[in-house]
Amino acid sequence: MSKRTNERCLIGIILCIVVFILGYYILNHISTMEDPPLGNTIYILIGSALTFLSILGIILILKYMYDNKKKAERRERKRKKHRLFYLKESQRKKSTNTDS
Image 1 (cartoon, rainbow, N blue to C red):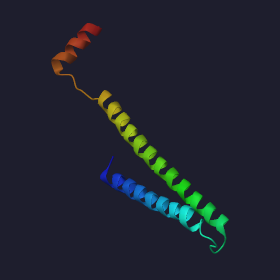
Image 2 (cartoon, rainbow, N blue to C red):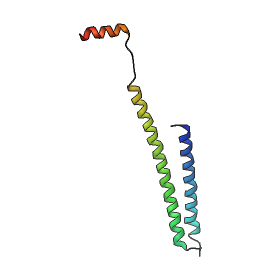
Image 3 (cartoon, rainbow, N blue to C red):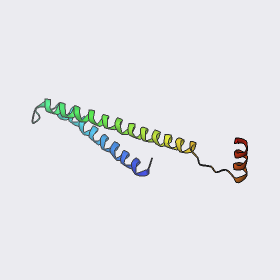
Image 4 (cartoon, helix red, strand yellow):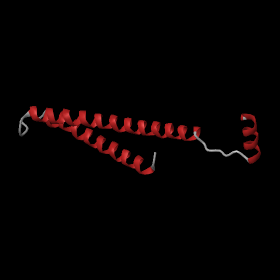
């Protein structure tokens, strides 16, 4: 994988970790307060959604990285199979004499 793709994936994972921490804070601290503004249910839903989305984001980024690596390996294998090679004049003459 290219360096740029690795950097983008790393930034995405760091962003997902930050969102997970925010969701965890909302879910475990704000939603358990005595009387939060907007009510406890809203904060429980928001915190759960943020934690779920961040975990899903990390899984999708890791899957993308794995698929991209597999695709590059497959492309490289395919490229190695189809090497071009040229026959020398003497080998060409031998192959035409044996074919006739």
